[in-house]
Length: 167
Image: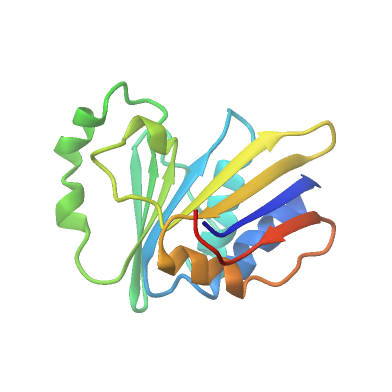
């Protein structure tokens, strides 16, 4: 499985990573954003959405569970599953009905929706670090592996890169 690990990156570098990824996700797919509170999941999602053209004001779906952004040629469904207790609670959102056409799923707290959400093309794991945060990106599909392979090396990051191969 393709993966990239970065250690001790700051918020600007995290946003830069999201912006770099934006150029490659316009055909749709699923990105899972995992990590503890305050690790940068929403920061990453907002930077990605802005780079895709969603505008400057990006609302967090913490209370609404889902925010939809209709962009030229792409719909982005941004979910925050922190407040759900079980994946079955997502049934009333009608996620299957939202999956028509080119859809990019940005899903925070995906472990709470397993079985009711699309599997990840790309999993982004964020952790607090002594300085900044550590980021681990893992391709979960061929599409996700292509996204990772297309990312440039980012400044301000110590990056151990293993792209390609299977596991």
